[in-house]
Amino acid sequence: MNMEGNITPRRRWQVILYEIIFEADTKSGKLFDVILIAAIALSVLAVLLDSVGGIRKDYGNILYALEWFFTILFTIEYVLRISCVTRPIRYVTGFFGIVDLMSILPVYISLIVPGSHYLVVIRVLRVLRIFRVFKLVQYIGEAKTLIQALRASSRKITVFLFTVMTLVVIFGSLMYLIEGEENGFTSIPRSIYWSVVTLTTVGYGDISPKTNIGQALAAMIMILGYGIIAVPTGIVTVELTRASEKKITTQVCPECMMEGHETDAIYCKYCSGKLNP
Image 1 (tube, helix red, strand yellow):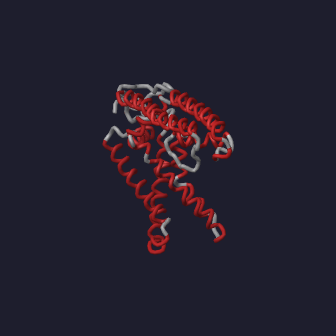
Image 2 (image 1 turned 90 degrees about the horizontal axis):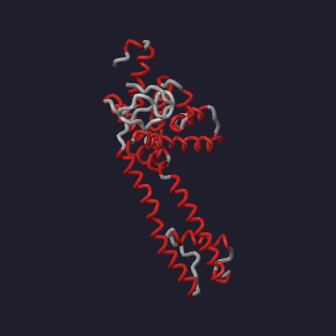
């Protein structure tokens, strides 16, 4: 590493640890991610099995031991992440920092909530461990590309959803006038509910038009629904194509914890902080 001479011994191990934990472009980083993904998957599997009465009765002690093993493992990981970033508060208050904390905190809280009348609370806390599923997202490159595409297309999708909301209000009001209360359309909100169900091609069938005009309008809404479904798909697909064409790394800025930098980037495009070489 070229910057060896300008780094204190403590800073040197922080940089090395940072590259292993937060970056997946190196062999050590990839190995760390693979091991952590396996640990997350196994811990979630243990949570799911623990919810089955028969399995919990026969293997409860083993599952309990596994739970504490994974909790301690993720606690060590959480501490290491905080210790190797330049601004720990950015990581702790960030999305994945909160997810990491939520994946270990319920187990420790359950220790200070003893007594049989607290069993319901403990069960709720144990269910919260399923937050570990979200930890998997940060290790999948394709998920990051999808998130970037969704962010880029958010304004277009917002306009699209506003248009759909306008249409369902119009169609619902028309159906209320055409069918009336005698055919089950007792109010405009209920008619709007029918319009949403029909436009999205769900078709529960709990309410249906009885008049010829109402059925004709319903047929038009059904056909329109197929076209509407394709619109957001096309918007996201275009942004996915653009996002996949950008050559980005898995490197996370040690200053602001943002990612999505290009391969030749030296400074962070969000905070101008220097990236690790």
